[in-house]
Image (cartoon, rainbow, N blue to C red; front, side, top):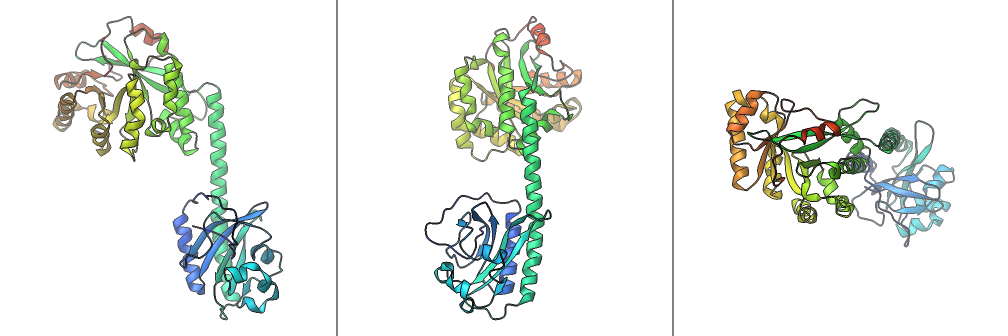
Length: 418
């Protein structure tokens, strides 16, 4: 995707331009228009203070223009068309004195040229939509300009919507940072109990948000990631959780959730310098998280695991990704998804799947934790299947820190977190 005026003089500055949303569709439209008009190159240039940025380009000839190229406003055809110094269509540039005098005309070269304004709904001039051919094209007329204007009107609506989405994204990011500045999220502690004796094994640290708008925690993180501040929110949640670690009695593990992106970012390595006892930390990676490069993720996890961090794969049994996580990351803990746990006492298929995952986990030396236990019958069924630990509302609801400390006064299953 590229945009540029019909000019590419040596030494022009270039910058990597982000690929607009629906870029492939826009390029297809550009290609259709270019071919219909019988031109060699079509492009969109966005006006900036001192230059034009080539954002979209369709050029099968692989000419001198490229995406992200920045060209001074005073050079080329675009600004002169805007000012009315050049006509919107020029079938033969050699017959126009001003066009003939432009360096781009001979350097590119440009034999024929079409250019129209892209004007946003608020009447702001975004830039120009241009086509040119290396040769003359005596068939060009006002009808071709009208076609180009119709395409420019469509592009204007697209760019306006894109700008609106970006403004909304920036507003959401600012609102998220304001919420974080107030200390959010609040951390609650979901007890994890060892089976079958129900000794306390540890806590999963969960995020809660006490501000408007009212959203579920997973929705808060989704909105934050969409606004580009997801890792900031994740890191704050992790820091807020680990702030309690030294105040928690020795013994219980603390489970914190992390996306693969957070791990790959390297920001968790700062935890090593914060004085935390990382041997008591369980890092949970959700089954639903997309992992594109397991080798890179394993490498990023290596220094954390060397410090004693235990690795858990969350939501196992919820989909195919969980098995890829397990086989590629070799977790210390495998957590059974609540969809597998619910009604397991009365569902032979759920029992068979849970039994298979539990046997596999034990074969590779992993601990098995069942999530979302809501009934005594489910708990007993899981214990019979050999599941090591369980959590859920039947056992305990998420607790504040004072309540979590109270649970620590009961029996605790000592030993490794994983």
